[in-house]
Amino acid sequence: MKGLLGVFLSVLIAAALGSPAAAAGGDCLLPADYHSNDRPDPEGTPTVIRLGVLFADVTGIDDISQSLEGDFIVRRSWTDPRLDGLAGCRFARSAVWFPITDVMNSSQLRKTRGEMAMDQVRIEEAGRVTYVQRFFGSIATYHQLDRFPFDSHRMRIRMTTLDYPSDQVRLELDTEFTAVADLLNIPDWTIKGLESEIVTGTVPEFDATYSILHLDLLASRNSQYYVWKIMLPLMLIVLMSFVVFWISPDRFGPQIGLAATSMLTLIAFQFALTTMLPRLSYFTLMDELILGSTLLVFGSLVEATLTAVLVTRDRTELALRIDRICRWVFPMALAALWVIVLS
Image 1 (cartoon, rainbow, N blue to C red):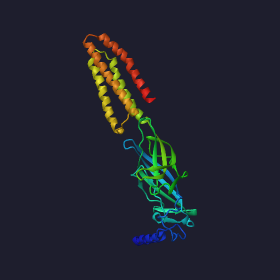
Image 2: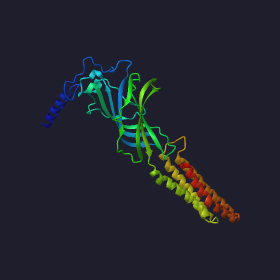
Image 3: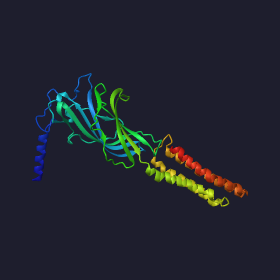
């Protein structure tokens, strides 16, 4: 009995939706002379597409793959005078003229169906056509990491209609719909805002000029994790190596052992950090700190070896004098390194 009822309801829903011209109510039939392949505007007059993007969620920014993972809702609207008088109707997307919007810096966005989960457009007054669609996936960002981990970026999304050059379709920003959700699932970044710009530019791959929407998501990295988990331990490793200057040079075994242990600890620490950053052709702020720290730790190892040699040659007084000088020089060099790099 339940099976028959389900079949009956399915038939009833199908009858209500009807053909591609199914509607919320009223007589919704496309004009007989309507051709979905033809633009609403005559040649020489570009069709204006209002484009709005809502950042529903930003779930991650990947430094390794240089990408942004998110959930986006895109609203497109344009006027098709041929559909005037059909306000309140809904049509299948394939039944009307429809401009496909391409995200130029992503090939991995997945789409869900549009309006009412039936992939339909909605017709409003004066032939205004509206279509809402959700995208989720990753977008290439190409952000520079030279100030890592105190970096801020403009994560750009580039959108256009590759089927129609700028002389056929012109984009406008839908400011009422373009925004960032108040609550985002990305604790390691702070999203400071969203900036937008419509430009006209050439796409070399298609050898044509297009109207392009630039959406810049302004993001700043929350650096507290790196300060407490990386930078503070790094400083402690360097300071540990400075203890050799306070050990009597005639005890050169523990002195050299401590310096060598500090050096090995720092090397292991560097290996642990290699998975956190892509292989870059330039130095980041963190790289500069690590390199400077490595030189200081290696310098303490060299100093311990030198004073040990002096002691074995009965020049203990000179070894003690070098230790006293290094007790001040090396900490001052460490402070100068951090000031210069972080300034």
